[in-house]
Image (cartoon, rainbow, N blue to C red; front, side, top):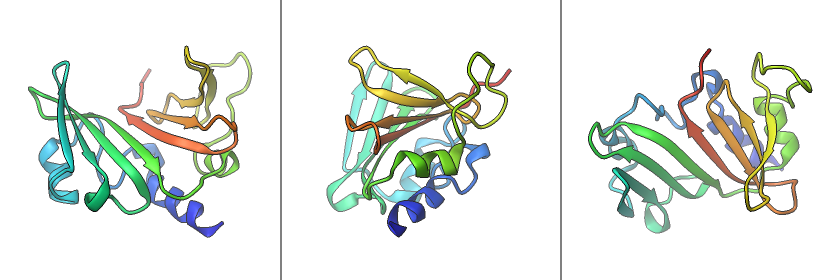
Length: 153
């Protein structure tokens, strides 16, 4: 199970700083993404945003797909969706990013709040890190990581 640990190390090289592979939601620009990863496989306009995706021949190492949502006006990356290539389990996520937050308490550090989407998909929200980790239907392995600018208080 070395691959998931290596991939998580790439994902969390500086978890508190919240970038993924050197791209920081809320700060990095579209040109930073293209400079780092090359021209995207796809570029799709969507509601004032541009979604650029890397898959197929432009696949980013350790992923099956990566998408960057960019503000069409400012060209700032707002969100990164990463679909990991290796299987990453829940325990690896908790060891890398933090455990569940104490019940009834406001998240103080790197801990997650377990949530469920309207279509019953379980995910862990790490509010201080700007990270959501969506689980597969088995509830034990990761489907995707969503990076956004962290909420500050």
